[in-house]
Length: 141
Image 1 (cartoon, rainbow, N blue to C red):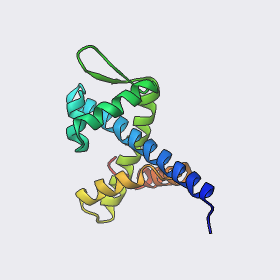
Image 2: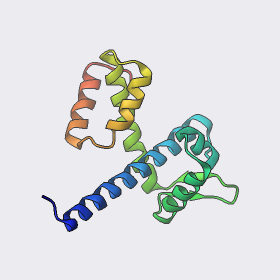
Image 3: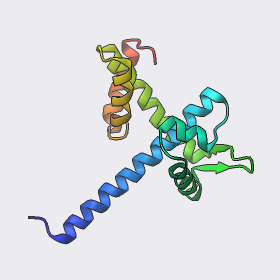
């Protein structure tokens, strides 16, 4: 049986993990939108992630405070070097996983959704092996 202190520590770890995954999702979304449209605004992020504008506003504040993004006077969002490194890592994982899932017969929609869930929890060792597999089999990344 877990003590109340152990339960509290577990809740903290889960909450920290969820915040981390959420931040990664926001950074990845900013990168994807930038690649598609050439610019990123809060409303674009809200639409992309299907979240409310107040949720995006709160998250953008936290990302800015942690030096992952900057926002100019026109409301345009830019990834910092720190934010870009994380976004690119997660986006590469997303693309590789989606490609592998589709190559084994998973529909595009499900492959995208599953990649979003898996990309955050994969060890570097496993991802590196999956990347080598995708390259060896000449999968279209």
